[in-house]
Image 1 (cartoon, rainbow, N blue to C red):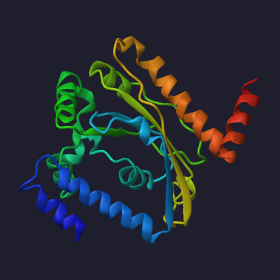
Image 2 (image 1 turned 60 degrees about the horizontal axis):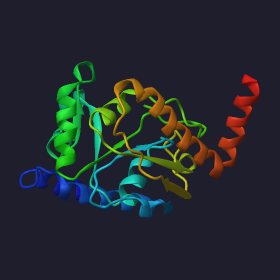
Image 3 (image 1 turned 120 degrees about the vertical axis):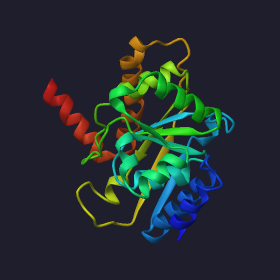
Image 4 (image 1 turned 90 degrees about the horizontal axis):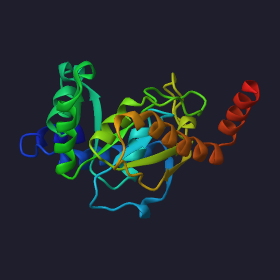
Length: 232
């Protein structure tokens, strides 16, 4: 029902604001019916009038419902342009304000799309690991995303998701009730940075998120400690 309403809204709301509300309601229902509770910290550090690039670790397919219901901003995703070919999903993403990017040709056109998105007051939510973590360890970030944020002079907000992997593990269809923590960090300015700073900036964001996940998740901390010991 919500999906049909969201699709119909494309005819009158190309900004995607109403579709976002439908996605929030759908996500809330998913969390409620599977007994997943979310505790959020750090939202008071954000300016509600400022668009951001939210960067999060990725533990579970549940991460997007968790983020879209917990972060009170109009969130949009950056996805592959090939999704345009998918019936319904592709149309929905294309006409409700999400960014469908041809990664082989990304450049000025991508920056223009991001600038237009931010000009409408929307924010981006990105998962720079590119895949879900099986054991909760925060995987290496791809720096390309940070190059885009730097070139567009957009503030980046590190977000740590803790515990969602216990709700639905990668490779499994079974869900389990659980408690998830979401820690929103202080925005990081990209003003004054250049493309050559992207990798270092990526490392900085990665360390913030990794430290937070390790602080709250004992299993992940043990995994990180064992990696350090093996490297030593």
